[in-house]
Amino acid sequence: MKTESWYSRAVIGRFIVSKPVQNVVIVVILVNAAILGLETSAAVTAAIGDALHLLDKICLAVFVVEIVLKLYAQRLRFFTDAWNVFDFLVVGVALVPGADGLAVLRALRVLRVLRLISVVPALRRVVDALVRAVPGIASIAALLTIVFYVGAVMATMLFGAGFPQYFGDLGTSLFSLFQIMTLDNWSVITREITAANPWAPAFFVPFVLVSALTVLNLFIAVIVDAMQGLDDDRVDAGKKPLHEPAREHGEVMGELRSLQEQVRRLTDALEADRR
Image (cartoon, rainbow, N blue to C red; front, side):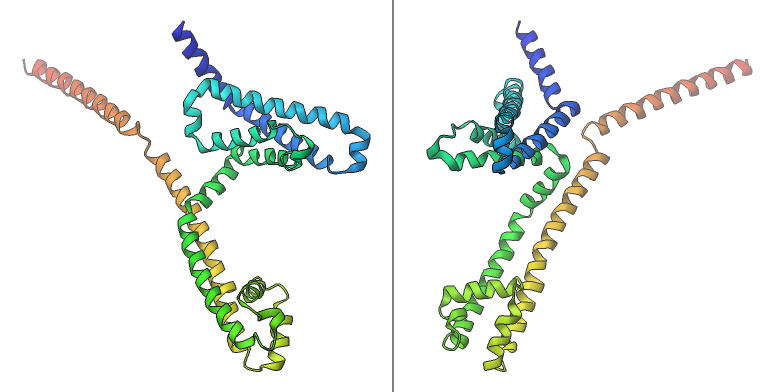
């Protein structure tokens, strides 16, 4: 009985992660995303609201069945995979009753669309690269924070008296410099200040070069490097699987035994000719 139970769990485990089942899950996620989008339209909800709610419950039921089957097949191993935990939390939020006082939780149903990330391998690879790049991103964020703090203090001292709406205090200066860094209407701010202070470009141009054109590009470089590292790991894993040395050793030993047998036969034939 114990063997049959283990066998059934193994079969269910292979079934639930098989490609056809995962393709069905992807389709259900896309349908659920379309349903949640249609529910934001008052006209559509008034016309076919009941049908949309029914389809939404069916989609949720599919997700719950998938999670339950994975839990049955993998037991506690289910929670050792971060993507499984992510799916569990997203589906769990959707199961919380959506009473009037929990309108935010009802809105969180759209998080189910994020399950598409855990199902599609290409999207998972991008997220894995982002996670792998976190240490580098944190270092660059610290550098950007220093640049912003120094720039905000300088801008407050230099332009605070004449332009309090942009640089009146440290908080306002930080916001204005963030707007300048994103190049959002930054020329209007800098031209207005430059009209009163002709030397102002000596501050703003280096700040834009350092923050927008250098530091922000470092974020892209770190993420690209992390994705390249994942690709290299996959290539190395494909070239040198763990079972490969043992298999190659067996093939070499088989060829050596075959050569020894051929040499023995040739030696016996030569000895027979001499006699």
